[in-house]
Amino acid sequence: IHKPEQFFIQRPNNMTKIKTVLQDVQRRNIETEVSLIFGLPGQTVNSFQESIDFCKSYNVPTILAYPLMLLRGTPLHERKQTLELVESSDIYFEKIPRIQNNIPHVVSSPTFTYDEWLKMAEIAGNLESFNLKKM
Image (cartoon, rainbow, N blue to C red; front, side, top):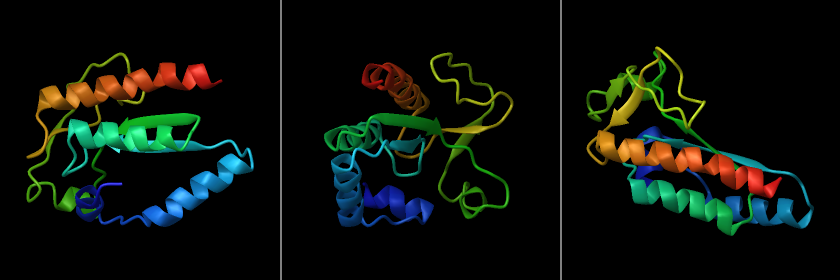
């Protein structure tokens, strides 16, 4: 939902269409799931929380959040130095099963510190209890 994040990852979204589709699937009682990524360039703790709140405001029953991993050969990986993305594979955060061992994750950037990344990871982990309540 945040233009700067969309710009950095080169994935613009048509928010009018997204809102229409989310309303339509809710009206039709179609089970939906939204997957978000945290650790994006341009992202902040607040913008990540706003993305979750947006999904909740459209009654998305299942919201998952994954930490950003830069895959070799992708445009984002090639721009990681320019974007000042810092990666680490020395992460242990038990609340999120989606953190992969021995695979580097982006843990800081000009718009979030490592401590703020940990806060986003905590928010992502708390989605598990939100999702269980909806079941």
